Image (cartoon, rainbow, N blue to C red; front, side, top):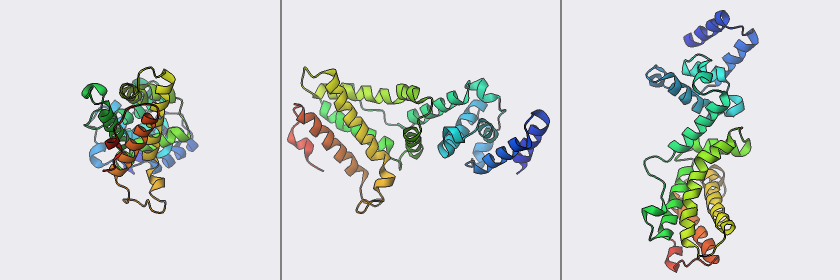
Length: 254
């Protein structure tokens, strides 16, 4: 409450905010996810505190719902700091989403063909496991939330987000799939296969909160390993139908 009074007093003496503006800020602050005591102490830079607060507020309220004032208030920063460090609210949101996407990989790097060039089928299975696990809400709830928000209400930064984040994993997938398919396959066919692997595997992970509420798929009844294996099998089956030589043992369920 002391912090709130300080902010309101600052607004009263140092800005032309109306009473309605102050009431709106009070409402926004009541809706804020609360940082821990350790996180509220100024042990990090202003830019990092703004980014941390923006992740929480954009996740909870979306791009339109989270205001610049609320983000700065929670970060303990001047309202002009967003323009100084990021340029605009839109640019800040872009940095937040890129930060969430790129930090979601954890300690395990994305599987690439060059890691095992003589076994592209094995690398595809590794890539699918990485991909599915990456997007599972139980592993990366913040990432899953941002994806759902972008699907439901694309932000002005969607194209930049796709270019910086999604395309990296898609290019790695294309290199692997190209090594599995027979020679002479057109770029269109290659892209089609990659989209059919990338899209459904992502959706299967993102829709877990819905799938887990269906009869027979309650929370905990379908293991991550089973979900990954199913994604691997249907992906390999599609490639085999297009002429790829894939031994039968790759279709055996573990």
